Amino acid sequence: MKVFLTGGSGYVGRATVRALVRDGHEVSALARSEAAARTLTGLGARPVTGGLTDTGVLREAAASADGVIHLGQHYGADTAEVDRAAADALQDGLGDRGPYVHTGGVWVYGNTDGVVDEDTPQSPPSITAWRRANEDRVLSRGGHPVLVMPGLVYGLSGGLVEAFFAEPGRAAGSVPMIGDGGNHWAVVHVEDVAELYVLALNAPAKAVYAGVSQNVPVRDVVEALTHAAGCPGRVTSLSSEEAADRMGPIAEAFALDQRLTAARARRELGWAPRHLDAVAELRG
Image (cartoon, rainbow, N blue to C red):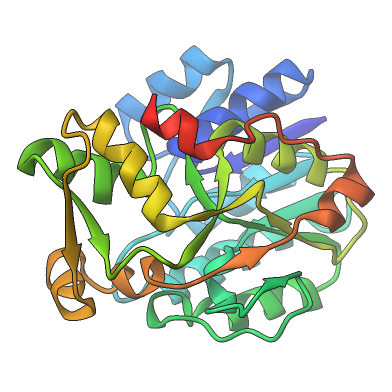
């Protein structure tokens, strides 16, 4: 299959390009810089010059593909508008020729009060409150839309856990933790979620999948990160206000207590995550 990606040179995107190429797909991907183009070429993908706001480029690239995976995200006050316009362009270009796989995220469910699935009512933190309207729009259009909702992605020394916890821990000699760490994170390894995106190209139209491999206590994650950061056992507990001052709006999402099941993806797509001990890997 000819597959076009946005966000292909990013953290999850690089793993997804590798998984697609390994599976025998012909991959093209959006590249907004020469550095991104070099990265994509090295991964075996053909770069397509442009950014997420270049809707004409997106429409044309999707029109030349058999399937599309939208991983890219624009950061700014107009995040929702850019994402909506990009999705519209990609779906318009692709039409009904193949699957359009859109990226969401499990943070939209808010605090879950136990283990929940994709059909649970949403209660998002402010940072992801915009997603629901865009996702409803994607799924209500024609063609073959599919929604993948990853958990907190970790692994390969990248992602938000690395940026907001491990790196500050190395710099300060103590890893931050919001509150007492009694909440849970629904997590997934970057290589496992990449495989889920590949499988989603064969999913039924309008299917929605939570991409979660484990639900782990945050205090266990933070303790593991103290070893990875070279400061074993050194933890700095932050109040919600202190975390917001240090991390910004994303702190509200990190403070969520979430547990989700990916039974649907396992059952319908045969998804079988291989990385099932996040705490050991993050400690590593």
